[in-house]
Image (cartoon, rainbow, N blue to C red):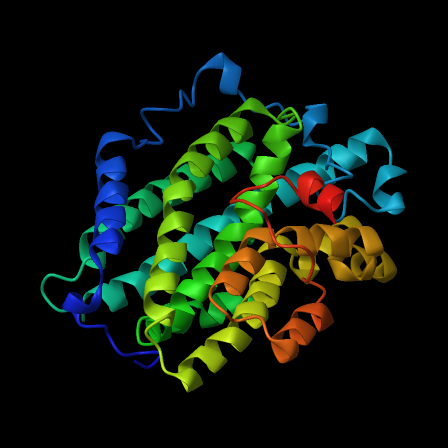
Length: 332
């Protein structure tokens, strides 16, 4: 099997099929609609532009961890935090659109009876709802953010289509985009969810459905990579750290216009994204679950371990999926 070859349906074991059936049933019986499950016009979800909860967390946000940001007047911290939050949400919506393009391209060339076909469509439906939810939130925050950085925006239509023809790389990239957002949102909620209520509610919905999406990506990669020949596995082993580091930067780092808008010094931007020691801790923390998966798939060898380290995304793997970073640090 190659990076682009579709596995014959009879090669999948019953356990894989049952897992995908369970995920599909979960999508049918436990799903959310952003215009039903969020009372956008309710007073509890009203957006307060001066809410101090827009201030970036010094533990979970790389810019919030800088001394420069923490020493700003509170009004400026709120203004910057609100813009950054809105932009990450906008980028998240754009990433979902890339995922949908790639996944649709992939399923339309599957043979009849392929176990992934149904679940992929459920996931794409949920991602469409997430895009609606994210854009509605950005609109209500009222900050005109650009979202993706210019190069990624220009390439995104082609990335999605190309991913449909190299589906193992596509699903590695899906994890590279989903894991940083999921890790950040869970960390904020575990810390008490001290963010504006409308943002908190969208995070709760996103985390609930994203759990299925990440589970599927893990199951998909396990089922497909174990059937690949040695060259394909070697490419996948290199793709894991490269995709994680690239997509973490695209999703969690803002465009240059952000620094220009708020007069952020170059050295602060370098520290925040991702030269500072605290920032590298945050960056590596996004990928504990992915390191666990790569190890289980036999994709960690002396060469790839060195690559993970060079990209500053190495560290202890999670002992279980979604293990809090504090737990990993304590064990290490």
